[in-house]
Length: 237
Image (cartoon, rainbow, N blue to C red; front, side, top):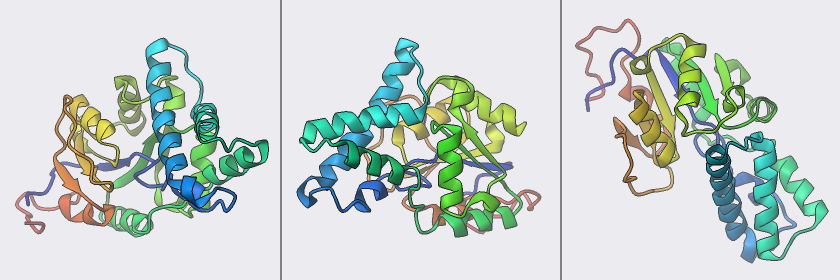
């Protein structure tokens, strides 16, 4: 497999890519077992839908508010809405678990000379809490939020903001997301993209085409030629 060359920074989506959004409901014993999976799926689906709809409507609200509104919909839909359960789940969402391979992958990338960053819809406070809670604050050079441009991915302004903050061209960035819509959009924008297809999603019928598809971020370092490495390095073949 041919490595991506000329990459200087590895930029990651946060939710579903670095942080496991299912871990909030998984750690909450107050949810009936027969409704746990449905709650996670509905909460996530509505969270994403609301970001896209708010972007189209020009009615931005930060990701924390959107996450709470999506949770309200999910809890009401399942008939389990209580103020105490809502608060418990929002607290747990603020400290989501990182996927097991994340810390080691970030460490390996930094040792190889790559800049590491997050570019996420998450609000700055949410991202700071999640990064610190997972012990990743020393492994990231930048944590960038769409809140700075007041619109959500997949709007091109979000990806452009990431490039501006890193001072890099699109083809110098390897962007990683487990969300197919995000991976395809970043590719269409011009970034090199590694789609971490954790959930076995189908390919999207959208503009863009990820350069590589993996199932775990542990596979990422072998796909990237380290900065300064010889141009004919093909260790990942």
